[in-house]
Image 1 (cartoon, one colour):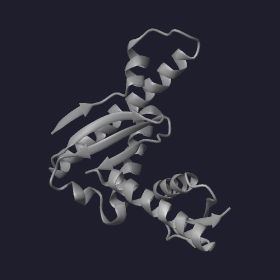
Image 2 (cartoon, rainbow, N blue to C red):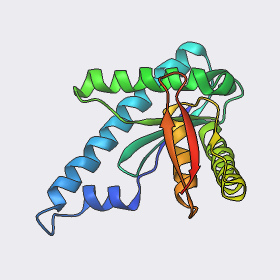
Image 3 (cartoon, one colour):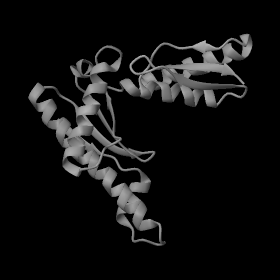
Image 4 (cartoon, rainbow, N blue to C red):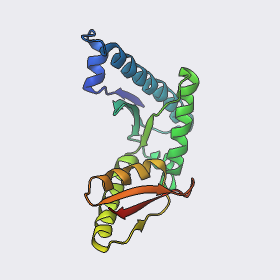
Length: 183
């Protein structure tokens, strides 16, 4: 098993260069905390993979103000995703709790295993676009099936990119769903 740390250019700048304006130390501290979250999560997940005797490469990154950890490369990793990503969601929550236990701060860390979230993101973006186009055409609101917060966010983003429609979430977890309306 190997671990690869990939820092975004902003992280490299924030952690390697001296502060040049008043906001730089704050950005630097935030980025450093996110890198620390990724490191803690990577260590936690590496121990888990060792316990399960699974192979995988752990990549750490910082994107859009959150630590992103991905595990790729092993043949058993699909078992860590589960049906409709349920095992992945639980593993992400456990990893966030491990980070919180170490740092004392609630983490917004995002975990991906075997590229599942990346593939799901594309699938959901297409679903959001096609549903929004259908609502534009028919004028009838579209109620999608219940989704996780991760899934709903992607649908909302896809719908927001199309003029003439808007989306809202309705219902209570775990049955919360996106509804798309003509504007």
